[in-house]
Length: 357
Image 1: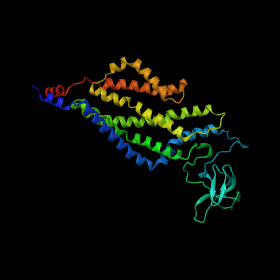
Image 2 (image 1 turned 180 degrees about the horizontal axis):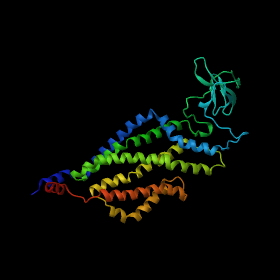
Image 3 (image 1 turned 120 degrees about the vertical axis):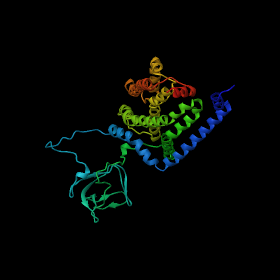
Image 4 (image 1 turned 30 degrees about the vertical axis):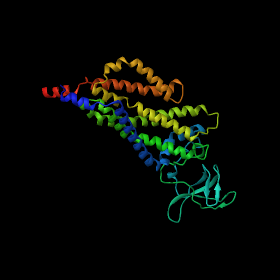
């Protein structure tokens, strides 16, 4: 005769076709979530691109420009920010990219005498102190130059910081790709919920309450992993790569770069899931600290393989830059499994323990 517990377990079992139908349902839900996130990201694709391009712009600046120490006649000369200038200060302004003033086009690299003044509305600015003769127009003295005095950093990309595209449709496909990758990143909590909903029928009833810590910890871990790749791993890697090309004229394709950085960020976001997944599996009782300790040799081999795939270069220092955090995460996962791990119990065993207590 079947007990209530047995009936509940049998009713929770699914046939192969039912598993396929459930998988199809979760995949459709995930696709809908990503499409909605993609539409939201498309409206800010330019800001996303600017954010992702900051590391390469800084690296290109260092690779294309030479740095000269400030040495003057008196030894007291200093480089001042624009917001330290006063009315009446003069100097020469250099256009870092082609600029249009009405019908006159000023080429990148052109310089003009400039003076700090206030316009008729009292706004402080930098104005031309002499006319500029272009190929088809004369830009008179007193024209405001594209300079801000609010102390904010200048985000305008100069000629040597701009990446290139090689086809007319590449900017569109580039922004689509950026929006798609960003949509995946911000959809992580919802995608994790779909994964949990798919595997939860295979878990005991008391084990399903770990859905909240699983989604919360995994989402935070993904953000930390992507941020770690963006701020810590990627800058030295791309600096090293561009340093190898110092004898060449650097012209980077924007599509190649965006594929490169998003792959690294998504990969590190997934890798940083290790402690969160370990916590949930240890609480359920599927893995233990002893199992992770016994498997450390296999883990090191897998970590080195993943680091070799994710790392942009084949040299040992860069590969270890990627492998080191994974090894630290593995050690952290062992500690988490040891502290939070427990033996797996069925629902009936949990109920009997609760009655005894």
